[in-house]
Image 1 (cartoon, rainbow, N blue to C red):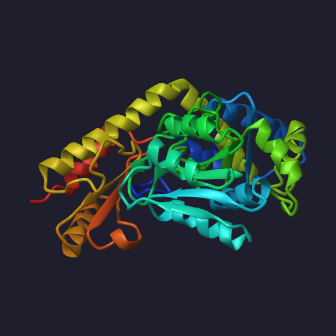
Image 2 (spheres, one colour):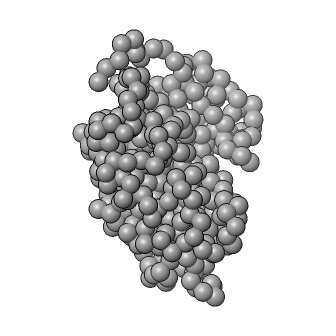
Length: 364
């Protein structure tokens, strides 16, 4: 599918942790004429996307998308699956955000906080579950914490939850891990996982993708006040016939389907390996040039790395060198803003492009 006038024109190449660089082929699909979302072609595309997302999330249960940011799924997870109390294991800005959303939804989140840059380990979760006077309805976890570059061992954590509190639903923010780091929804026994299109899927923002377990769908039937757009109880029947509850961005769904084809061609395991190679290249660059990683242990995300700099002026120098060479980098997130910078090595970047970026930002 091609659109006239769409070329890979010169522009700053995005290495921020999202939105990420979008290939010209996918941008061309986005420029195609709009069609009605109730047309058969659109409905078929929606059904195809759900099938491709089941493959991506490695689930035989449910997978869907919606016109919304990934933050909407943090809220939907609470509104659909928690009557009152959820456990939030935090280790950075976005895991902390989920607990704030639970409070905003009128629930009673219990927060167990790790320092920024430290991973959440199974023993931390076991301790929190054993200390509870009654089982939590859900535990909310972040897989790849975008603010720090920590990758939490979700598979091991999920096994711990099933051992200590089998009725607790396992909800996972997989925003910067889906399509960039190993995630096995069914094998790990997850109940909700979600990611926006603008991270490792290497598409513009606009859609959130998510996987749901059957027991999560059943739980949602029991929780009142779920809302309308992201009502988990109603979603499977809607998408079975390609009927979305509201008007989606149809060209973006077409682009998502093409990207899922491209990922299938690359191979999901090969894609994970490429992201790991980009991370390792970035870490070697940091070690050789006085930019140590903010995360000082083996739990480092393959999709985003936060590197320390001596001070704010050193961060400014890195960002300016990147800009002069045609790349876009950003400072660290929140309280890490003054002395870290983050490289979002995710999506469709080839290794050679990462090497070009690192050569450009190397101190003189």
